[in-house]
Image (cartoon, rainbow, N blue to C red; front, side, top):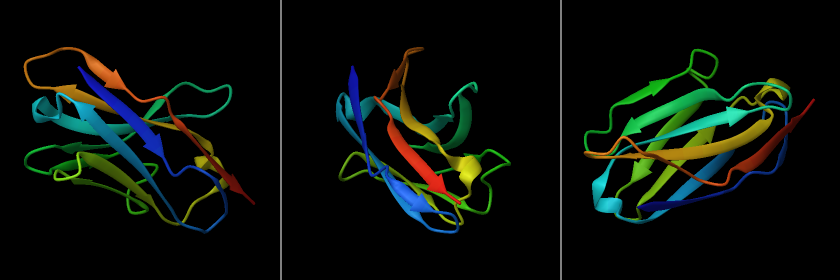
Length: 118
């Protein structure tokens, strides 16, 4: 199993920047990919970004492409989501997830609240 703990969410003004982190523990050697989703009040969860844990290839939702950057530090077993040019529409609970090699189970963190004020 893998345990994920997000941190870094807070209130930020529109146009500002914020970096949220996702610290992994447990079977971190088995992580194949880490990603971020978000869920705004009254809306469904949506994919934000994903990164391959070994090769580092990335993918992004169109809504954040060019503004958000996903990265990782394998030595710290931590993933990051750098968010620039934040908009009120980015307000949501941001949750990280991890996939393990050879497993169909997706592991989730508890989420961190990001609020963007206009």
